[in-house]
Image (cartoon, rainbow, N blue to C red):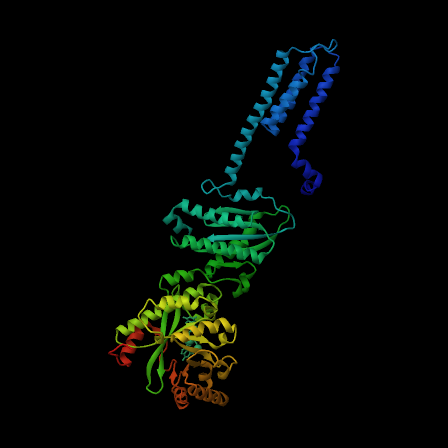
Amino acid sequence: MKKHFRNLPIVKFLIKYYKAELMIINFIFMLAIYFYINTIDYQLNHLTYTHIFYISIVLVGSLVGPYAGLIAGLYAGILAGPLLPRDLLAGTAQQFPDWFFRLFMFSMVGLLSGILSADYQKLNKKMEDYLIQHPDSKLYNINALQHINLKDDQVYMVTTILIENYEMITEVLGYKAYYDFLNLIKTRIQKIYKDTYVIFPEERRLWILKKSDDYRDEIQNIVNIMKHIKDNIEQRLFVNFGLGFDTRMYHEDDDLSQYFISTDMTAREAIKRHILYLRYSNLKTDSRQEYEISYDFIESLENNQIFMYYQPKINLETGKPESLEALIRWEHNGVLIPPNEFIPVIEKTSLIQQLTKSVFTWVIEYHIELRNHGLYVPIAVNISAKNLYDVSFYTNMMAIFNQYDIQPKDIELEVTETVLVSDYEQITTNLQRFYDKGFKISIDDFGKGYSSLSYLSKLPFTGIKIDQAFAKDILTNTANQKIVESTIKLANDLNLDVTVEGVETVEVRDIMKAYHCKYAQGYFFKKPMPKNEMTQYLLDTIEKQTKKH
Ligand code: C2E
Ligand code: CA
Ligand code: CA
């Protein structure tokens, strides 16, 4: 009820211009006094009544300000001075020093009451700020929530930024750096969203409250701000944080601190799941699209928790390994996460470029390491579709490649078949450049999609890898037997290297050999294994080369 009254336009107007109104009222009041004195049938000296002006002068000075007080004093001084006769009946004017002295006193009282009141208000504001501000960071504390005015029935975006390792940050960099970091977050957010409240309820979190217009957009923007801030500070320190988002419709008398219960929880869950952010509504549904992979991934990359396993490709004629495939592994909190679980998530972010660069470097270095053992073994790297969409992919890879003394044929690229049928042009351009340079290129998971070899033969590649699904049921599925046999034949005719994947039994190996498949890969021969084991295995199985290829 009270609030509705305050929302009336006339009330709003009166509140907004109350200072001007106060001045006008007081000036009218003084004028009225003046006329009253002029007509008074007096017992006292009528000039005594001019003291009434002090009331208005002090009121204007203290409520409107020092200059308004000064003006009120001058105005009263003139009314009670040259305009007011010394003797009302005779109409004799006052002597100049008399009225001038009074005018001076009036003005001084107006000015001083203004100055004193402004001082008092400043002090009061300081006290108030002190109550709602965190003293060192100058960020609003939890008490500030009571001073926030929100609009009824308006939707607000509620966010918690939870900084999990704040103790580590303050221990290493000190509190000042930490508060600077928080203030930087605040400034960046308020730069794009002016009317945003940033609250600092306790050391490890920030709360953000903002009128919501486009929730998804707003989430994206805040996530981006946090990502970039992280990039800035990352060189000095790893910041582990999670963001929780929610929306609320504001109703009069809501307790705002309750709004953040859901987002605090969501931010905590985001950290637990090693993801950057989570929406409260997704807390239960666990929808993968809605969140991005955790920045833990970058940290893992730097801490050698991401590394390669290697699996040999066996030449079916000789039964010996001839090359390797590099397969990525992520050891996270002591658990080995399979690539199928995190590659698709990484692929949604630009991290995939960084990842492929690292893989490329590690693989080249391992190739050289093997060469130093007298072993010549080309290694295949899996390339993501996202890499091939990137125009600078070839240049970036070559920048790495050129740092080493190796040849293009030492490295093979594996590209999945499904990639090749979409966004054809950019992908072909990239592949063609590698092909022309002399890199081997294989089509991975061949047969999984619907494209035929004749269709694909327009593309630059040197080999195919028949999808594991075929090896799985080749012994029982006669249709697949025919497909595999004719595919191998066609590939051989086209002079392409054929590898069959997922060979787990001797029977499958034999049937593939009978089809004249050149290479095979699978648990029957070797499972993927770490570098050192692989080196030992190769030393045991293949002959050392005396000269460099
Ligand atoms: P892929 O390229 O088809 O790799 C073959 C997968 O089959 C590997 O799984 C390998 O461990 C597994 N495998 C090998 N032999 C057998 C077998 O006899 N039986 C069975 N059941 N499986 C076998 P992994 O290592 O889990 O990799 C899965 C996928 O993740 C890969 O499929 C590849 O697409 C992707 N991937 C792996 N490493 C990388 C990488 O460095 N970059 C990118 N972009 N993707 C990668
Ligand atoms: Ca592969
Ligand atoms: Ca494959």
